[in-house]
Length: 91
Image 1 (cartoon, helix red, strand yellow):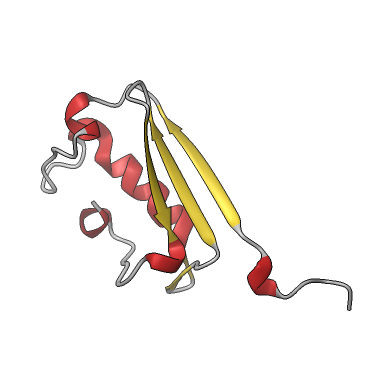
Image 2: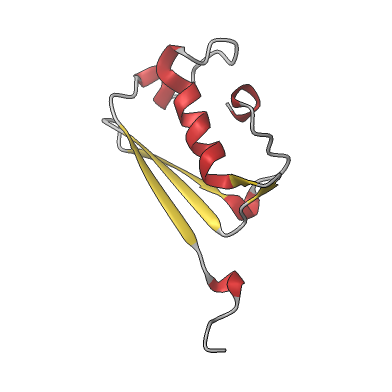
């Protein structure tokens, strides 16, 4: 077997989020209204990248690049605890 152990594979996912409002970039949003500022889309990206078969992908890192603010949010699957796949909890 010439393949390296499975834990040596790292998955990096980069999502360019364009036209992000200043409030969203500052972390100001209402979890009861995720459509405002499209926080729901960011939450779905996190869930899609990190959630698989009722567990978190520990070999995956997600980068959300918030444009035009030059802010990058890094979410490392290996550091995530108690993740549930619903958008409200994710936000």
